[in-house]
Length: 149
Image 1: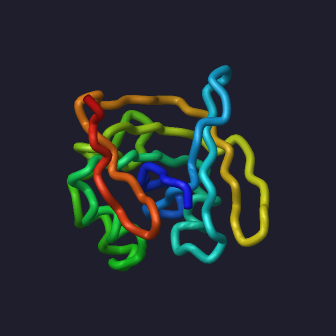
Image 2 (image 1 turned 90 degrees about the vertical axis):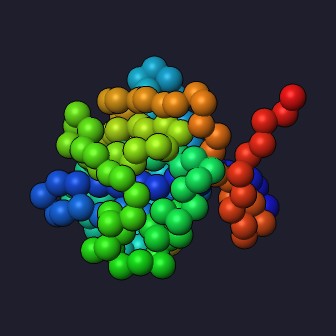
């Protein structure tokens, strides 16, 4: 039972556009800037991520729970980008307006661990909104993160 920020991973490229909600993502190192994302091999976005080898990690804000649920599988892959306001970032990847932060990456390497693929990614663009608070997943529930005075 570990609390984690709710994130939507998106990809666009030769395989098409796809995305999914994840909580298993974190920083790997600062020099070079790298992060990792863990994706179940049965996820509908998995083959898109492998083939496109590029992605954006969107850290969701507290008011974006509907988007988190859609990308968690409540909506088909084809309709997921109909929810929320999406733009294309400078690397051609789908980026969610209003998110706390975005990290646009290329896949550096992948490795298998049980049912999941671990994508280790080079970060090319990082941006954020320090005034936004992240949506948190804990104990099978999504909730806002409150500021402590």
